[in-house]
Length: 402
Image (cartoon, rainbow, N blue to C red; front, side, top):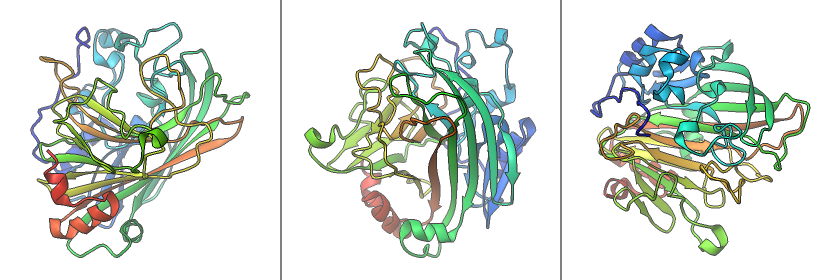
């Protein structure tokens, strides 16, 4: 990336930004749909593909959980001449704690690399439908909003896709929190939860085939990093000969042991925004849940998705010609940071991600991927049983993982 001018990196100061400050800034530069459930609130941006920009358990006085790239948002969309040589030639990193994407990113069926290109950063381009296109706001209530978009893609192998996109963002309340933890939410805890129902439909006249490439729904969330934030992903224990590797930790070079700790059925990964690295969990290993813990803010973040059958596997996003294009991961986490000595980070931020199965859809057929995100704040004694139930580990173990 040393030949590309990056965006203005934000200060790595980990002090918490108030939710109302982020919303006020966003409203100066784009339309914002504000959804509420009790005191909790989330800010959604139609112009950024119905992206959840940030959330808070207290929409008046609480912290903002989404990472917002203010310089890029403030600058706005550029002309082709202005983008040349900049990171925006490849992607606009607006930030936001849950965005709609499609995969695969790399490989012979990639939609981020055009036919005839190389699997190198200079040729990597985010399709406009998941980067700069605004989505239509169809419906809105106090606690939900629905968006729609029509898009066309061409993959690395030259296959064309005509895709209908529909995305519904809805707040979650105490009933859903009870379902999550198996009991009433203890007194003293504050939370914000939301669900996104993401659907793609084959609007073309040909079936999508594994032989010519399939798409998948891919959800990514950017969160504020801190030295005391640790990602936690439980996984199914078992022999690698049967279930495969516990973790794929080679996306951007192997993650060093000071940033990842892998045990029999759980891994810990730093979310401190100091070193670029990415990990993935296979569908054979995934338990359908991932999370993180900010020990300074005493905030437990939980991400779940709808586990469903995958007769065609999961798309592979590795930047290479792939022997197994449908042996991809279902859960990912990314820790941003300097990609090389002396180079600035993209953020910094850290991410939690989930993906749908590969979608072999006939004309008119639809696939959906549902993701739920929770931020729960309170004292550790009250949070600890929730961490044990959902992630299988005590907060002490998370805090002392590194």
